[in-house]
Length: 257
Ligand SMILES: [Cu+2]
Image 1 (cartoon, rainbow, N blue to C red):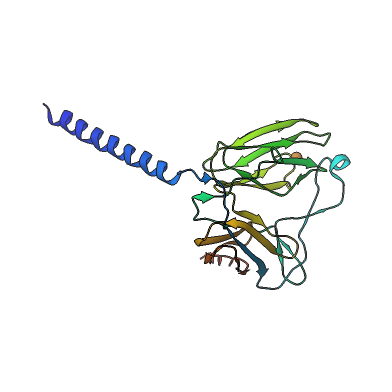
Image 2 (cartoon, rainbow, N blue to C red):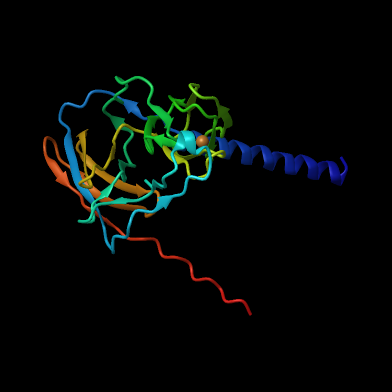
């Protein structure tokens, strides 16, 4: 056997082994959540507040299709903070749970509509494997452009009155944009379990039917990033967890020499 041939066999074996290891790891991280009945669950409640000064809502200029979209600037939904510093539309979830209550699928497929050149709602939850009906109620063409790592990204036009159902297989946070109207964006949160909540205008949330145990609770907000806390849930009891989020530090620009 030549040296080169031996090397080829050796490196091929390493490549096959690496691939097997990779597939094994992917399999492990994708361990499916097990849905069932929870009879002795507890509840996690709490609030998400902003630690910092509240600035005015950012306004987005409408630069195109003003007949349909309206001529006035649109308030950005990227960061909604009340005067008393409650954060609306932050996503709170349990990240360390493999078994518990069932997903609530009673409402059918969630929808994300495009109305007046705004995605409605700005943030949508969907269970992994679920479908979202992406709609266009406007009389102009919109374009649906998704930004994702695990789910297949799409970039498709949708005519007025159109509907584009899209399945989201893997848990992740997906950004949605319209390339025609640059101010339009939205978020799709693909859930790996049903223990997700979105804060209301008081910054409050509640997650029920949590089996007793110790969990990591994550809060995510598109502009403020993430934070986590460990909590222990006891049967039939309510446990409170409050988050305080700060503005992300802006990176200092390097001075040009
Ligand atoms: Cu658009």
